[in-house]
Image (tube, rainbow, N blue to C red; front, side, top):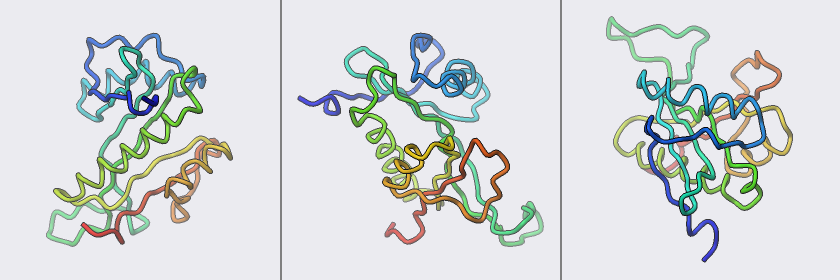
Length: 172
């Protein structure tokens, strides 16, 4: 049985101890350990935990988002057609350092794409959006999985690269 065959996923709950997790990147570890419970409490995001047996080996955090098709986004209170596309943001993804380079990150990303695709059948979702750390290997990984650099969005932070996965041409 391969490592990927042994992966299970569960929803984050505050009583689950995530303190021992480290992907080796301080910024990602900080977000995971310090903001997961806040995002859960405030109902702003969901975090999914990936285990092999009883070992936490990865996670992903998802939240609702949108991409604007106009320079400024207006609320459509007067019945105007919305000028944005609904999206799911992959806020954060990490794999425990000792389990990296085993396909787990790819598995988690495939799980996200599949989950959002299924969600798309019930509600309007056109994109998965993310801001990848500006690392050529990481950018290449996301591009291999079907993401593209979002050329319509200004890159304000040179440490992050906006990327999108576009569902609009896929059959529903």
